[in-house]
Length: 161
Length: 271
Image 1 (cartoon, each protein chain N blue to C red):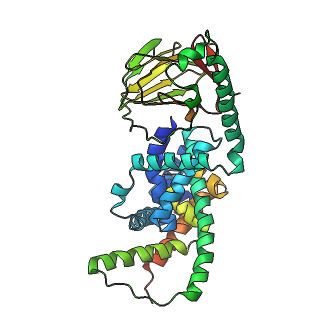
Image 2 (cartoon, rainbow over the protein chains, first blue to last red):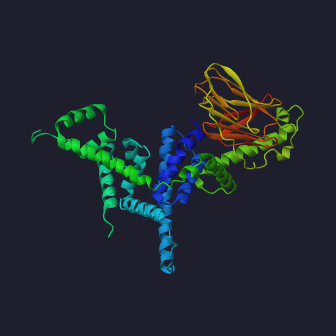
């Protein structure tokens, strides 16, 4: 498989994964493209499946680094920011935004390992690949996934206070 | 079902629901499910749960994403970022590669400068019509034509000619034997021609020529003839850019070693 074919096969799934993980479409595309630049410029070789795993791992690491920087920045900004009000939204759009907010909140209540498991499974990773990604035994993946899914949905269906 | 029945763990049921169990273990559990309503109910719940999670996560995908995730556009961005990285090198992890590339380019420049001064030099032919001083100037960025991976495949020893697309051609070589090499000549022909050892599979479409070798030793060279009129040709070996040509420029990257042979440029993979 050529690099170009790997790119075309993997790019949409990587962006979807990064976007779900980060919640920011621009950041998602940016880190995915950064991962491909690193793949091209680094000495990464192997089967396409291995390269796919490498790309997802790199994207996860890049997102983690960004989240750390963003958290520091938002702490600083929060101390100085004046209160602002958003313009009113159409009812349908407001509903959609509320749904997204709830899903994101449910996702963020999971720890990083469970969130990664959940999102990578959605991208078709096998149990063996998932085990390699998060550093657990393949035999544990079913249990971890079942609990992560349950926790995610419990949080999603909780009544908003 | 009696009190001493051993029920499968939730993890096993989840693995069954996800299609991840070994066939023998899956068959064991299926037999158990025939008799156990509790486990059957739990399996149904796990399946329903997985579906609900997938649906919920789908809300995070913007409906405009289809428009947004255009790989060809992203590919252009990645190429531009690579150019930027080359212009401003910094990560130590890839420095060795770049130093290799720079060394190869410098070596080639010196060789070209010296060789083109000699009347019998094969590189005279190679670089004919261009000022040697311009030969290794930095490449300007240009996006490759989108490839339509038309699948014509041939497995016999072949020579193949393929037209450029918008003056551009991507030549991709895969599974080149460790002792194999690529000879590249420039000609006045309109298209790109290639010959490869027996067993090489060709996949081609306008603007794209892909050769997949057998990886076996002692297979001999791949010979490629590039038209001088081509606007841009990029040669990749196993997904890594090995060389790039424009009418007046040639850049050889560090993944290959280059020398001249009977008027052709010979490229071998770096050990």
